[in-house]
Image (cartoon, rainbow, N blue to C red; front, side, top):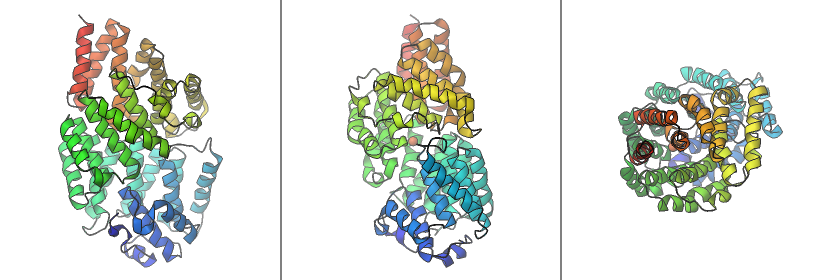
Length: 468
Ligand SMILES: [Fe+2]
């Protein structure tokens, strides 16, 4: 990454001068904290800091009990979405350590709020975590750690307005010369896009990219705008023409390749998405074993199958998901895992995941993860499994009633379209007249958000043929 990331990292006096005082005593820890959040916000390793893993190691060594460092590291663990305090003792210990630090009399009020927010997020209480970050931002709008993780957690709770407004509120308080200010435009762009304000979203993405062309989050936000507006060929040219800028962007690079695969599927071209799966998306998911990479990989294969494409043995190329059967941190993950497991021939595991989710709904903690699972996720997962097993009527009866709440499971409109498409296919496959009406309804709803392009046309054609 460009040298700016390691330039002028704030020491204790620097943080104090930014009205963001730290209670730790190590200037090295203060500087590494700055270096960490800069890399996190830009989604890429800074060579001068030896990358994020080394930066984290050094941060922990520099002052193991530094409050904001602990909060930030827990935020990053929770961001992975691949575990929970209910099933992972190590993760629980990390959360409890944060909670103990939050009770320390030697930290300041802002740090205490950060530690509380991180613990709330890690325990699956996302709206409560967001309220806590917003409390920080009301007084400290230039607190980038709060800006960044509030933004991410709004994404994981399907709160598009929160994603937009949280950044919109603080942006006017940022000086033009603050090192990460441009990234706020990329975040705002994504929030605007998810709220359907496509022109303003693209304008902000372009502002961000004009300031830092390597901003892969702004690239991603612009790809979303193009996806929703049906500008697939323009999006292909944009993503493929800037690939060198965004490809170092950690898991977002995998996700941007996923977006590009969607462009081709939209156009009814299936060879390139298969190549993108083989060379990028599936390969990266296997290497990272990260949940966000895995759901993207599963999503592409499923979408191709919905289009009638034979994906061969690629389901078996996905990482082993059996260790995630009991996570239930995000219903979004569960709803992808269930079909990925079934398609990989692990029917028992797919059923076990659904049974485990039903148990989580019955007796899990009273957090956001459980609420969403109870109201949307369980039914969605049962519907996806029913579809996998050819019980299309059950798939319709499970997914149709919860479709308006699917955004709550996390994921973007583009990501959750996989469930909308599945629902329409299920409606068409039962042959029931009532279900054909459902298909028409869902396609009309889909058209309110997304331009009428290739996939919509093919689905509408199938519907028309089913009525002949
Ligand atoms: Fe996306």
